[in-house]
Image (cartoon, rainbow, N blue to C red; front, side, top):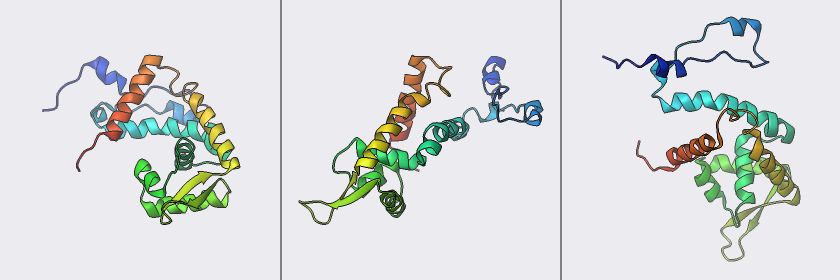
Length: 178
């Protein structure tokens, strides 16, 4: 039989009423579901946490700077590293190489980045930001440093924010077998 949770623990997993200004009166009057049977499913928790995270991203970076989350990540990685290759981006972002090629093509068409042949290994291409790309990457990075602190993470202490990031990074980067 499933283990019985304390009412205090299960209350954490009941959706709290929202103050989202985009919610209609009908949405506000709909009773929340008890989500306690999903509390152990990391993927579920990540998925529901992703909703406000994406809204925040698109409000502060996506719409104003015309960047998708993966494009922001690419620009940030390129800006913070030298001699970046497509293979490195593919590995860092866990995206198949052909998909990375399509995204790089799109950014190159926007004159945000260029591909340059390596002087030492003519088979390799390095991805470099154009001056406009560097400006965009720096602006997006500056916004990213504060956008979540002022919105979805404002109810967490500094220590909780640090712990959340450290744990998510540990889960994301720990090798596992399917």
